[in-house]
Amino acid sequence: MEPISFTLNGKPVTVTTDGERMLLWVLRGDLGLTGTKYGCGEGYCGACTVLVNKTAVRSCQYPLRNAAGKEVVTIEGLAKDGKLNALQEAFVEQDALQCGYCTPGMILNAYSLLLSNARPSREQIVETMEGNLCRCGAHVRIIQAIQSASEKMGGVAG
Image (cartoon, rainbow, N blue to C red; front, side, top):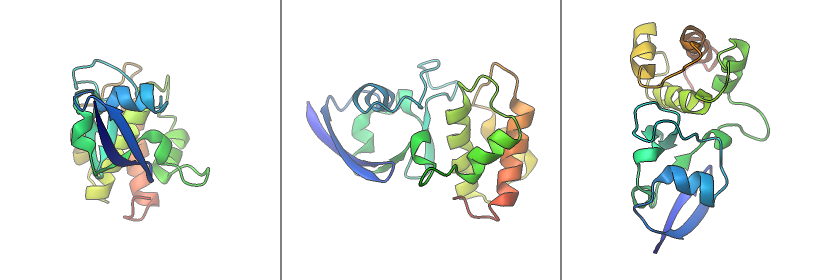
């Protein structure tokens, strides 16, 4: 057991636990943030994607110890003051949600892309999102939502 401190959705937190526990289980079990989903547990499906220092990571394969001193953002932290982020709004507008299980991971993976490339091509979006699986088949609408958000955000993810 060790205390591990990091910033979570803009607020400092300290969790005392085994540093090898996966971030997914700390977020869901210890901190009650259930927007991050358990999918495959192997890092393949993307349902557990969160941002660590603005980079998309698979929290089911990310030991908590690695988050020490870093900024972690979950889907709960993307909206500000009760207002959805432009990317979240685009997912709603483009009906890219269907069952919604994969949506948090999809949005955070896409947000990471838009932070590093404000105007990605369709091909870059498709390539980035390939590792996030959607069983409902909403991929076309997901790509449209990301393109729409990129245009609305004017090159500024926020």
